[in-house]
Image 1 (cartoon, helix red, strand yellow):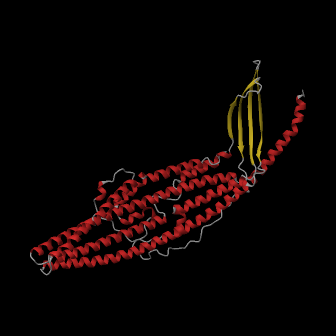
Image 2: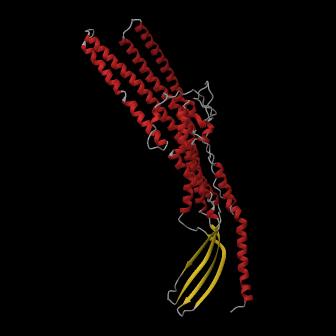
Image 3: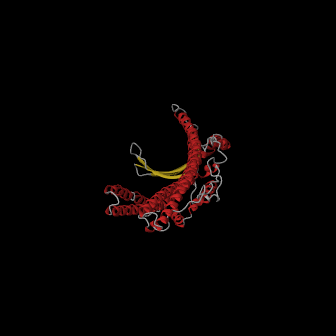
Amino acid sequence: MPSPALRDTRMRPCRRARALCLSTLLLTLPIMTGCLSTPIAEQTPPLPAQWRNALDATPAAAPDPRGWWGAFGDPRLDRLVDEAASANLDIQQARLRLRAARTLYAHAGDALRPELHARTSNPVDPDASASFFVAGLDAVWELGLFGRGEALHRQAQGEVDAADADLRDARITMVAEVTRNWIELRDALEQQRLASAIADARREQLRLQQVRIDLRLAPRDSLEPLRAAVAQAEAGLSDPRQRIVAAEQALAVLLGRAEPDPDWSGGEPRPVLAMRAIERAPADLLRTRPDVAHAQALVLRAAAEAGLARADRYPRVALGGSIQWSANITAHRRTETEGIGVFGPIIDIPLFDWGLRRARASAKGDELQAATYAYRKAVLTGVAEVETALGALEQQRLREQSDRDAWRALARAADGEAARKRLGLASEIDVNARRIERDQAALELNAAATQRAMAYIAVYKALGAAPGEAPGEDADAHRAAVASERSRP
């Protein structure tokens, strides 16, 4: 058996080689870690400085994007939005998904930190002459070389950004849908009131015409058109009643309720929308629109996947060590216990795989480029949607103004006909005819005002405005997670 001194002399070259290998690895670690970072090309298209279809002259300042529905001046709508902000089920789901993504982000780099495992096994010799009980500790520390570490962080950050965009989209959709359905409900109630008034006037016309027929002042066949008009007026009541039910049920779902509130059908008629300017710059869409933020998150995730595919083409380097204890039990009932430890680099070098790794890296690079084009399209689509919504809002304003002028003219005609009747210069039939014309014009005006309100809602939905919405909500919690991630060894 060699002496201890001789064994030590033989092991010195191995120790020196191991030390040299580790020193070289540690010196080249910073270079291999950052030299292969996957770049992300800037693909944001040039944006216009101002909106082409925005209103120029307005009597009031633009509303706060976080409370744009306040332009309706309806306290009940404000309360509904506040309630839905905390009770809406879509928002609660999106909030939990964002929390889950941030939790995983805080551990994004754990795969590249030292890991320690304990294991046991009980192998038996093939000749059944001895059995073993092996217990040991294995430690592995994979080094995030060739851009792998940055890719893992980008992947986790992309998940966080996508979840954050989904939460913002849920809030934007919630406030837009609550406002839209509330306006629909108020409009349907007003439509029901006007349709009921028209139906009553038609019935009165039918009654008066029957009186004239009984007095032989009109032919009997003149009664049929009036009966048809009464039937049509009564049929017109079904549409607002159906709209009332649909709007109430939609509001209940948005507020997380099983049944609508009976008080929603009472109170004031449809609120009046104040004309206000849109002062937000197009560049704000990059910060507020959730689809743009989601497309940007997809770019980040595609860059992460491209980075991982690229890193897979290079060696995977880790530092590993293990300590094992073995109890040997032979067939003669003799027991021996031994222990051994080992430490050194673990290197996995891809040599030949028929070009699969290269193909994956090339494919992921193309997917990254496609994601950047999708981001560019999302930006352009957002600008186009806002411009379209602004143009529709202006056209609806002009339509409402024309319908208002028509209603005022017919209202003056109805008032004049009523005055002539009081002077004995007109009949009740003429008065009812003018009232019906006035109420039908009021229906048209009510529909125009509702369409302008819907266009106003569409503008702020396209702008990406929502209650309490701010890019990176709960940013303090996220920054704390980032600081915790960076401070861990």
